[in-house]
Length: 258
Image (tube, rainbow, N blue to C red):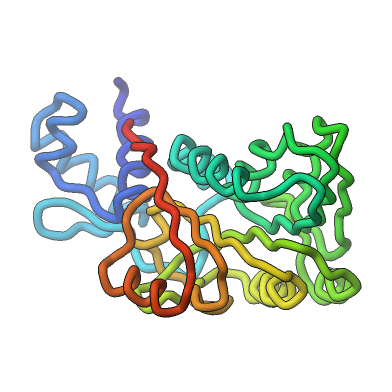
């Protein structure tokens, strides 16, 4: 493996796990501790990681990572989450899928559903569902965010307010210890809040990496959600809070490894 490939994979592991350890990376790649220390120093100089004793962590940020990087992260886990959520989405319903790579995985899991109407502000979701002839697709308008095919802004919010749908399936960029769902783009947050208001029931789909990330804008609380689909057990305090709120938590069995 070349150094550039190793640096790429180190970043993927860090985004998945929140931090990396020198000894663990050395064993994983079959290289010396000194080699990994040089790799981490280089990534730190590039601003990709922050060095800490024994390894490195993701740097604090107010900006999301790139769309392609997000799409490549934990694909197996996201697919398992999507399949679990799709099993509880009935045929013959209307639902909204918002921006995000996990909601795109849900769209792929819906390709066999019948007589559904999917509203979305995600052009990628619409393109995926084109392959389901039994799905009516409504793309709400708005300002196109070219980096990920998302539609945001006041036009999007006003368009969503014209509908009332059976189910909202949303993702988020981060989930903190008290159950707040967070994101980076304040315009996207406003859209997500409107989606939840117009839904009769709401699902959150978010993989384990969201437990270790931070974002500045608050969408709302898990207390608002009927069901939460993820791929790792919740911290004990948050799991207890979900029980008190009546938010059902479904943890998939999929394991992700590089």
